[in-house]
Length: 201
Image (cartoon, rainbow, N blue to C red; front, side):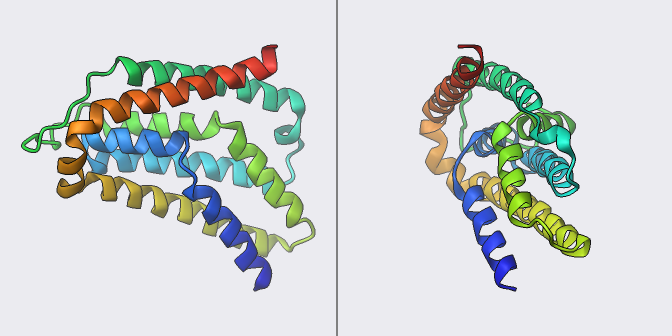
């Protein structure tokens, strides 16, 4: 029980740190509503599930330095692409805006969520470290941990989407949405460039 509490706390604290996934969900919520952002949330959780299965199954390829380098390069390019798209975006929210007329589809956001999760090397490294800490645990225990972590990622991300998708939140954040989008874009671009630079240079 103590081990589960320690793992659960470590995993949840990692979720609380805003990152690429957080910005993707918030922007999707503000432009297409929380229901479409739920697609991105499920995609992100699915990507986390892939890393959880790979790490807990002891698949060696995920810890291979070459594989991690490829993930980092691809992830960096993805972040630069998304970051520049955010910077160039003219996203605005008006209180009377009808978010039922989504700018992107649920399936498109699901795909973006998967890409965001799979191309983030920090996810792979995090679950590898957890797998190492749980070495020797029975398969049933690892399955239980994996299901728990998948569900927590999904529930937390959907909570973020709903929280930022409420009419009150959108009304309050409406005037600063363009600036938040560009700041997030700048952050993602810098992170992406630094990821690529750490491999290339």
